[in-house]
Image (tube, rainbow, N blue to C red; front, side, top):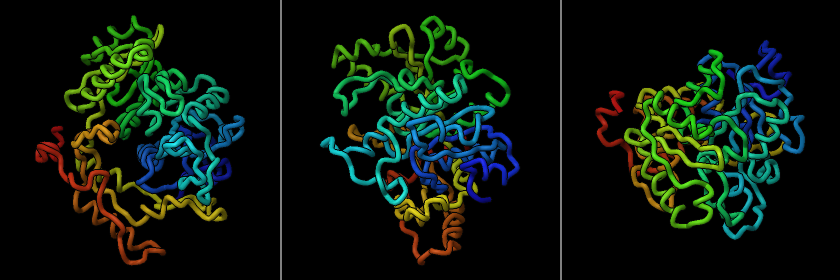
Length: 379
């Protein structure tokens, strides 16, 4: 199938005059299912959308952001596999010397707080185009949150980025729902019922929305309140933590001045057949050839010959954000799907005869609870 287009010349080679969606990535373009931008862009492609990728654009102007023109339906954006601040700085707040997700492993290809910076440039370039953000940096900053780097509580990333929607957690379900509604001409401000998404609105719309959407919601202390009180912050986070159950979780609202952050319930987990389809998409399983002259992308070395077998974690450890991002339900692939991917790996020219790893973030948890119901698609 080849890589998705990254410039006008590659668009022209495909006979495209316009993109449906532009995907902005803070990581270099690696078309491998260990990278979120690869999964989301290939999934959109499989649903018939024309997707272009601009990886690590120069954020000092709008030039790079506009090189493939204004997309027809919207812009999707992630700062990468790792939060950009964690990517740039050690726990001691010292600047890191390398970046494994950039050409040649060199740092400096993305800004601090990349989601916010990229969004500002998109707004400058394309004004009111639908703007959907996702990935770790956006997902984990969707409410008012303590920021270690500034040593203060910051507003929701929705307030600072001016994005329309956060697709939080695993975005396969929500991103296709959003794309299909935009394709039908639904204004992005009216896309407010999808599980696994968050947005901002006026307080007087909250009750109206949830009466229509039939979601129960709970209100947590406002940004202003959690800024003033550590106890209020702890209470707010406790509710966020408790409502991340995909089946029983309620919607959550949090005041930010005259606006409210509204988080719909988490997306339902993928069942086995849905997971199989995601990992059977037409990935190139390596980095874009334009990086060859820089020495490639170091991050691919650990995952190129690995197979993801499951997602999620029901451990819920207090020091880890995995369950907050991937969910508490273990989502697994079928044995046939895993074997098929392993066979594809053996056909690669540089395959050395062994697969590095078959697993996931929680290698000891291989099956969901109530696995029979889950596999039948009842959960």
